[in-house]
Image (cartoon, rainbow, N blue to C red; front, side, top):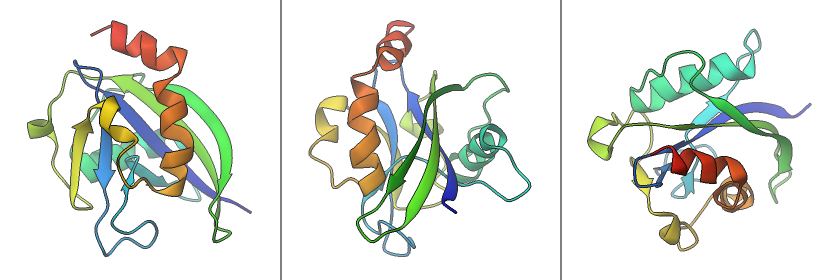
Length: 144
């Protein structure tokens, strides 16, 4: 059975995407960049988990209904670890100074032009470029 994961892609006023640089203590993708979010508990649904994970990792409490489901897909890492991902997105009126780093080295908004040059975790390398080319990203960016 795949690991259930709820992750987020938040877009700031500039159209930059919130990413997390994991530290050396991360159990997966240590020292790589990834999407904020994480494991869905056994008694939890994906969307509530996304809000919970966001609050735990960044200190951001978004109101219910703020997130849009962008992708519901599975991804398998080269080492065989298999995950069922639900990726949520939202446009936010936040800046790096609003983020409290609860986990990892840093969590910051990244210029989409720089994303390809980052050492991305496998799932992020798989999903983030697709998101940046998506209609949802363009619509969230245009609301800014």
